[in-house]
Length: 367
View 1 (cartoon, one colour):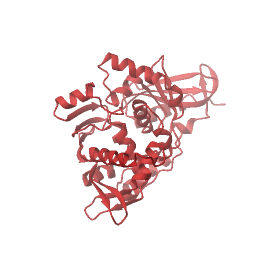
View 2 (cartoon, one colour):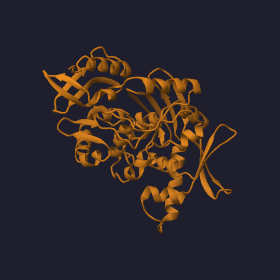
View 3 (cartoon, rainbow, N blue to C red):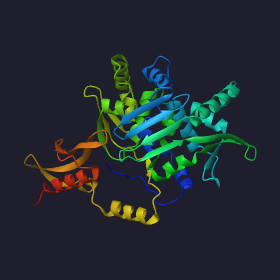
View 4 (cartoon, rainbow, N blue to C red):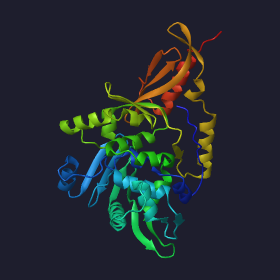
């Protein structure tokens, strides 16, 4: 659970975007479907067409309604990640919008891993079409507190003669959303992530990136969070088999998966950074002081406790979660003993952590 990432504090939205890949919420709610492309015969595509180009999904992290001519996939997320990571310039506009200038050649090279090919004209046309599909999507997100946000990710795609390059303009309503959200930086992992050749696996990895702490999730919980169609037995069976075949690949991203238990164990990833909401300076500084001075479970690692009547050393503390709810904590010792602390009172994550600390402190070995 150790977090070695440097936390940035107060800066404007341009600096926040420069130091981010996306917001945590965009990966926590299924704006980008866990597929490479949507087959017209798929359950998701049929429902989207039946509902007049609207898809509504309810998860533990809120409700999202997506409207547009085409649903967004992991390909669209890949391209946005490339643009944010390899932008030439990021400029604010007087209209309270932000322009991201990028080289099509650079983005296509990073996305495909190839140098310029004979089909470059076709590829650049494809890139512009994918960006237009992102532009045409409208998102309405309602969080668990009832706050509602309605925005487009992109308002314009332009060619700027001054820069001899293309640009996307981020919608000003999206920027308001971006300002207040926790954002995430996984640019160091992007090159490796783009090499993952299975969209569902890629979506699962991105989703785990959004978790700061070591945690456990059931496979079905992750599928539900991603908006995966678990009601189709055949589709679910194939997906489970695909996930089970990628155990080694998951491990390279700090994710362990047990196919028998159908359980994920996220170990954390020190290459991932988190950038806080752009609160007022006073609020941000106060929040940071609390984070720095407050005792966490990490402070108990290496301490001696009484476990099953013997003295033992705390090696690891992790959490088991169901959606946004923390079910229990696990204390593992150097002698491979495991102590489970259930969240019987259904406390919030922060409150439960304090309860875990107090409980472990009551077990500390005293000479």
